[in-house]
Amino acid sequence: MRIVIQRVTEASVSVDGETIGHIGRGLMVLVGVEEGDTDDDCRWLADKTCALRIFDDDKGVMNRSVCDVGGEVLAVSQFTLTASTRKGNRPSYIRAAGHEMATRLYELYKELISVRTGRQTASGRFGADMKVSLTNDGPVTIIIDSRLRE
Image (cartoon, rainbow, N blue to C red; front, side, top):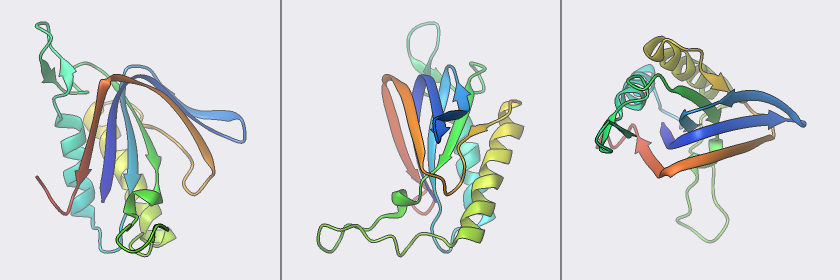
């Protein structure tokens, strides 16, 4: 699984002109699921997301997590994170997980985030044409791949 985490002051996602997910201060997370990803990958990424210390403490040092600051999380599925650009200029999405597996792991990720933060995870609609709006705070943007575990 690959995720892109952005620290935001606000973020929202809409489908067909209707806002279906909105948060204030917190994390906007794009979630891509690849063939071969497991529940363990999902748990590891949820733990990492919630423990990542990218919010400022009282001294202005990034030393607090989304849980520490009572922040919210908006998770949006994005199969294009699995793109391979090795050959030519047209990305290949052959590594993207099938609908059933990707949906299950995306839903599990959201559930795990909700449990860890104690707040409902806002979300987009899996497979829909979504419009995402956000104000990146910092900017702070971090990419994490569960297969690299850096």
